[in-house]
Image (cartoon, rainbow, N blue to C red; front, side, top):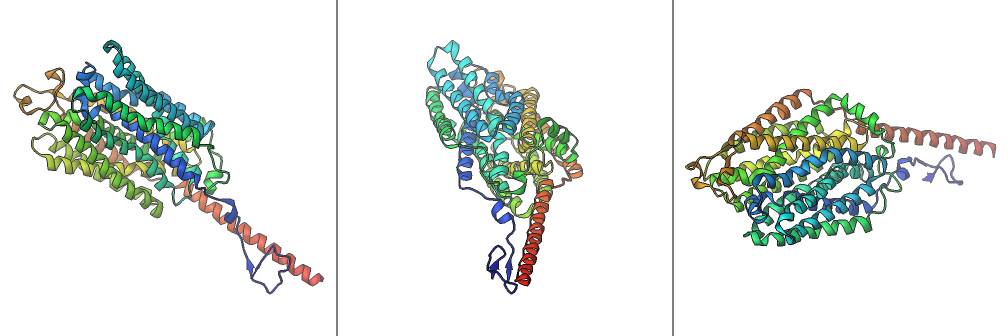
Length: 485
């Protein structure tokens, strides 16, 4: 057997065809470090976001603020995503992944430190400093939320992209899970609030150090796939293409509605459950089950997408099941002493709901290629945050004050008894939106064309054809040389 490039090969030798793909594409071990950095920052950022939601009543007493002000500590995350999300998309596509990671890590770290400072200054200034720190961390969120899709596209092979995206993206709900468990466990009384914020600063500092010292480049020296080496469309050109893509617009609206509802539930869990006699520990447990089951669902969905590439089927089935689980939770959360049913319904909602995250992110890139990954996935995140604000505001407006008799079993400990609200109608509003958007429009209008996979198959086929032609030419040259001799 002989290589065609060997000077000693003869016409009787078997020619080995080496396709360009053998040397053209390569993956590096450094990709796992970059994935770890994004995961740590994503984890820390979500912990900062949801810190106060599981202990909303204690937060009102420690900082001497209202429950509405506590909700604004979460809402500021969603509001900051819109302007800074657009900036993050542009920066990531024009400056690079490395700069975006480092910037998000530093903003997140500084915001976390300011939250600790707010506990050691005069009471009149503590809330402005607290919400300033929360806002800085909120500005970091869009940079880090759209990083996983970009990182997966630039550093990982086609059969690892969805899994890499899942691992980095699910660090965000993992942080929510930890916050739902740790916050109620530590803040058993209001004097322990400073300790909680100091503990949550540790991963923020770790992420900043890892990003600043360890992330040395935005792209690998050699691309991992054919699609990774192809230049993306300019931002405005890509934006126009997205608007004209029916499947993408449908996916964007549905993903946004689902993410918005999950954001609202993560923010309002304690306020939804405490009026029915469920304490902070149970609310925190439900939040943890919501995220924990979601991590399991996402862990299955990521590799399943990588193996089957059946984006449309997986997204449609999980969306329908998620909607049914949302309706179930809306029903059982309105009753007292239904711990098992509530825990079961919220676990199922998390399992199927969070499995949509990596699936939709990868699907958005597939059906819009060659639009930049940060643009297609970033607009999904922005849509989710905008709808999250709408969900939280509307759900609070629809929540009705409970009468004295209705509050007899309440475990809410806010500054004002009038802030004990019934969220039953609010929950059904969220489920109704999912029925309208995440089922009807998704089932009938979402038929994506997998453009990135198609482009990679064409590139692979072209590589093989080119290699065969080169081999034929080289073989002909060898035969001619032998005849001449």
